[in-house]
Amino acid sequence: MAKDEVEDLLPDKDAAKEFYAKYEPKEILGRGVSSTVRRCIEKETGVEFAAKIIDISADGDNKTATMEEVRILRLVTGHPYIIQLHDVFESSTFIFLVFELCKNGELFDYLTSVVTLSEKKTRYIMRQLLEALQHVHRNGIVHRDLKPENILLDDSMNIKVTDFGFARVLKPSEKLYELCGTPGYLAPEVLKANMFEDYPGYSHEVDMWACGVIMYTLLVGCPPFWHRKQMVMLRNIMEGKYSFTSPEWADISEEPKDLIQKLLVVDPSQRLTVNDALEHPFFHLMLWDQDIAPLKKSLSSTSRKLSRISQIVMEIKASTFDARKKFKFAILCVLAVIRISRLHFTPEPLAVECGRGDPYRIRTLRKVIDGCAFRVYGHWVKKGEGQNRAALFENLPKTELKHLYMINLSP
Ligand code: ADP
Ligand code: MG
Image 1 (cartoon, rainbow, N blue to C red):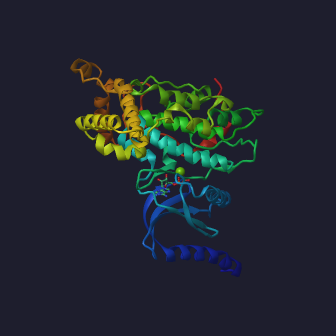
Image 2 (cartoon, rainbow, N blue to C red):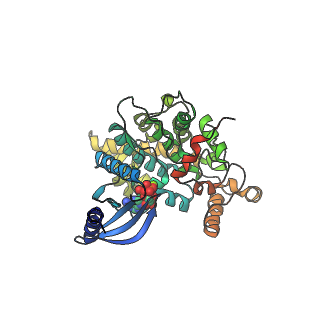
Image 3 (cartoon, rainbow, N blue to C red):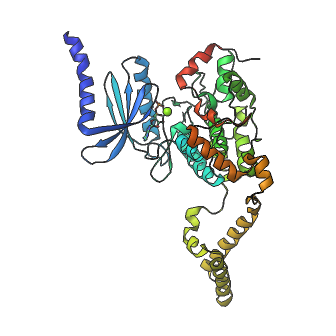
């Protein structure tokens, strides 16, 4: 072997050696186009991490792309809902990125196991996603590949946005033109920037569109623009053609629908920004769980609830002004109003006739049907036009987008 070749190989060995000296690799957690992610244990501390091992030997561009991913990960580091990069080992054939481990895996897998998320859980996840994105956008970064596969869940079921492989740092008013992302989550302007020579490009707004697609998918378990013919799906995206007609939407209130409608706006200049989205009434609940935790104990049963309220009323009546007690009483009143205003969302009792005729319209039965289908088939089965959960599993890997470059999508 020539001396140069030996010298070329040495740094690889060193980087790999350094990684294996420090970490013990375990099972595979996930695979990407040119990467494998493994659980690993830091030998000195016994702490678990996730190592993304990227093969850069076949494609020189992979190294540049990974180094950009690392640079961006370092720019966004420190946010509670963004993945933490712990260590990096670099050589000319492999790069090892060591991340904090998210034991509960992808939001995608969680969603497919539970079918749909409630409004409350959707609010919890979307708020975290938007807060993470606010941090990303404030740093002038656009993610470009937001989807449930790239949102991980930690031990406490809090989200961690990951995979900054397509992210870019943008100068103010800088635009992008590249076609990249995952088909079902692509914003109309990304497609248009590739179809029309004079299209002015795209920017941060593409992430807000993806948030709209994610939120829709979380609530009803299937994506908004899906069509078995990908060309039709892409045309639906460009026209912003989607609907709230599947049976699940009947049980969902107006606020989340309104937020989705304001995110899935074809004109990026009219779409909500991340700050606008966080201000939306969907997130305006006065009391978060953590705020009312101390009160929860005393509200655990109806009779105790009533006795607690009357007790506080009596205390207020009997005592002179006590701001703390007044505040507690106000909280109880607000809670009662919220509960009463939501009463109309309480499911109707199961009607045998309706259950026989169209069982899928009844939420409880729908959950059972979906759950059984998932357990039997390992994926959702088609139950009629416009409702196909299998769509969630049919997104092409992101590299396959390349062939779309040359395709004319016009009718
Ligand atoms: P790619 O750019 O190849 O898509 P990702 O960074 O998205 O790579 O990782 C691929 C998959 O590996 C993820 O979708 C997830 O399933 C798994 N994964 C990645 N990072 C972690 C992590 N920190 N903890 C647990 N699983 C992870
Ligand atoms: Mg990924």
